[in-house]
Length: 94
Image 1 (cartoon, rainbow, N blue to C red):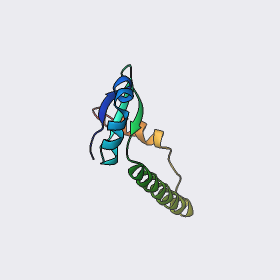
Image 2: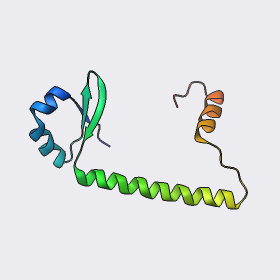
Image 3: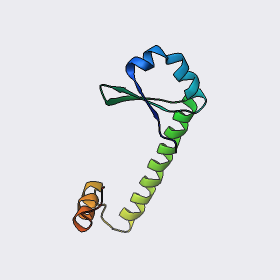
């Protein structure tokens, strides 16, 4: 996975057409305002593909959760999993 190129709002405004051409070719841009990320610029097809993958992952997760519930196994909230992991692995950056 390629990392986005960081671009200031001022530069994005001044060179929007160039950024859009590069995005259409597959390049990613992270637009920042005062060192805070505010937007990602990417090709619309890549964006749609990401949305489809997220939807597929959510569907898969729902199926797996359903299987666990059918077996009577309780679902553990993600926050609890992370908290327990950090207790046993304090060096980990989770």
